[in-house]
Amino acid sequence: MKPLACLSLGLLGVGLLLTSCREDPGSGARNPSAPVATKGQFEVTARLLEIPPGAIFKRDLYDYATILKYEVLEVHRGPVDDRTIYVGHYNPWKARVEAADARAPGIGGSVRQFASGQTHRLALEAPLDDFFMGGIVNQYFGQTTNTLYWAVWTDAE
Image (cartoon, rainbow, N blue to C red; front, top):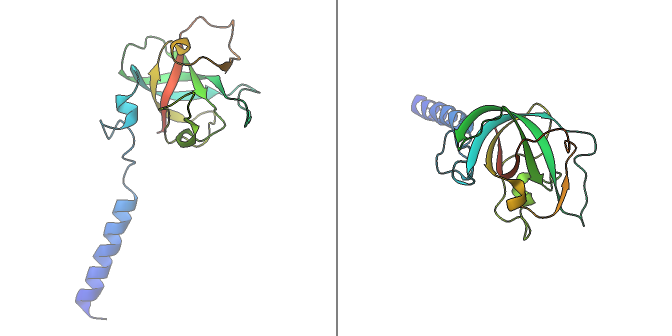
């Protein structure tokens, strides 16, 4: 192979490698027009602290929201005064990209499955009752008086 062809192939390979390693353009931190940066009244980066037993279960014929507990790491938009927030996720057993339907249109994100310890970039509305009227699994009922937020968009960080 000619030296110029080898050099061209090498540069092409390096370019492809760099392109494949770039950050996800879907996150509001890197893309101010991303849904997480434009939807909802509030936007935070938060760590999912726990998933209580029985909080997420698959029910094809039953739509519900479950409340998950987060530690706020950074507030990007809106006044979020509590370091611990409680967030309702619609049909949490579904990947966020597949969760929206007629009952909860416009929700989404890049999170495929919830796991304790994950860091999420969240676009939120509040209070939850103003945005969702349906079944709610809230393992924290009676344990807190904090605002319940509605997750409009949930991206993995």
